Amino acid sequence: MSAHSHEHNCTHEHNHQHEHSHEHNHAHAHSHTHTKAVINRIARTSGHLTRVRSMIEEGRDCSEVLIQLAAVRGAINKVCEIIMKDHLEHCIVDAVETGDKESLDNLSRAVELLLK
Image 1 (cartoon, rainbow, N blue to C red):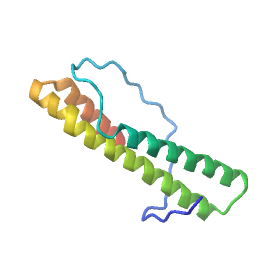
Image 2: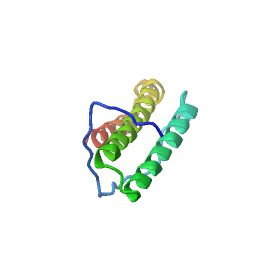
Image 3: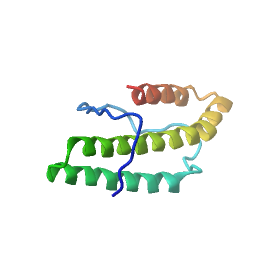
């Protein structure tokens, strides 16, 4: 596993759950341009996170663990960026064209949660 250097080296945890519905009432399909890339990035991120757990179990230096956590966070942020771009280019364009206010409200709520 290679170490990754990032400009942000702090970490924090969220121990709360978000209540949300998975029902989607809009008419367009959710096939996105970058699905395979997102799935591959998530698989790599999962591997990084497993490695972080091992590092903690092995008693590795906290700085090394934080660097790996920064890499995980960076990878998750990249996945969010790709999904957001896809969503804006497809779902939100469709929502604007069809007057689907619910999709716009859902995007607003998702962005709010991502920025917390």
